[in-house]
Amino acid sequence: MSEHISTGVADGVGRLTLQRPQALNALSYEMIRSITSVFEAWRHDPEVSLVVLDGAGERGFCAGGDVRELYGYTTGGHAAEALRFFRDEYRLNAMIARYPKPVVAIMDGITMGGGIGLAGHASIRVVTERSRVAMPETRIGFTPDVGGTWLLGRAPGELGVHLALNSRTMDAADAMHAGFADAYVPSERIPHLLQALAERADPGTPWEIVMLFDETPGPSALAASRPWVDACYSAPTVADIIARLRGFAEGRADAAERAGAAAAAYAAGAADELETLSPTALTITLEAVRRARTLPSLEDALEQEFRAVSWFIGEHDLHEGIRAQVIDKDRNPKWDPPTLDDVPAGLAERVLVEQLHDPVWPAASAG
Image (cartoon, rainbow, N blue to C red; front, side, top):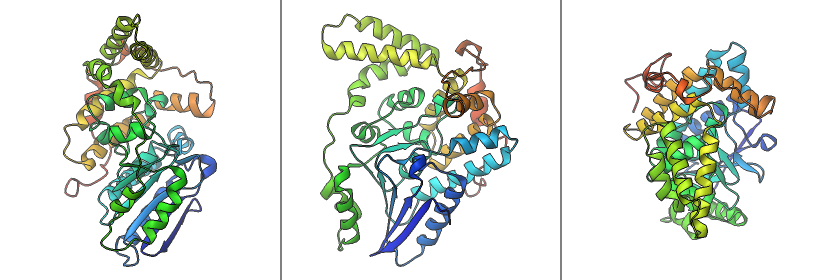
């Protein structure tokens, strides 16, 4: 068992807590294997009728996978270990989604990347006023995975494309609107929620208990942005999306109303941001989210993500993105190719379709 998770069973509740607060509970391979073992053990344990998944500390549930560990794998000639990491992580994500017992995930604080893989597929996903939810992979020259494209592809309108390309961070209201969370419970009430789940009495269900603590988080800025997001992010290519964002911003720059001016400023900022990110990662991410909308199951989305990840781990931009953002922290990545025009035609389709390595699941058991 990893020292970075703790477990306990009491009153029919199995509680699994990520215990790596100094690293925002980032997931190492050891943690993924231990979490998987716990879920496998509790599947048939008559003492466990409900699982609560949370993280230690007040800063975050889980900031994602351990990017430094991934960097060590991909730059040290250990691609096989990296692929093992992703296969086992994706199997865990799917296990949580299909788990036969209710899983209540407490997404308090930062919940990003691999944290979405754990909490985003749970039966009941709870956010608080401290929640900051995102799939931030494009910032490191990567693409959303852990079933993130499945969730992003099902967000209203083109919000999922915007969230994916710009790695936009959601608050509680945004996460609920986008379909990444189900209930809002103020952080000060989380201990009372956990107590109520432990003291539940039939026929009360976990969802009914969570609803006793559920409050309205306030308006979603993401929802308010949807008209212009839909108009801009429905463009066929990343370059066209940037052009539409520029056109919208320029057209609304002189808007008298405050909301219009704010939207114009945000759209201009979104375009500026896209021009700083990896052209390759953006191109593949756009295609991945749109393809995920047509896939029949989470497992199919995870397989598509694995094909993309299998390709990315040997590519310059992932290594350079992690170096610039996490290792050296100079925030000055040098992408290759450097512009959207230089990305080879058909690259995204090839990366998402071509099976470079053994799949996450044999064909007979997928879906």
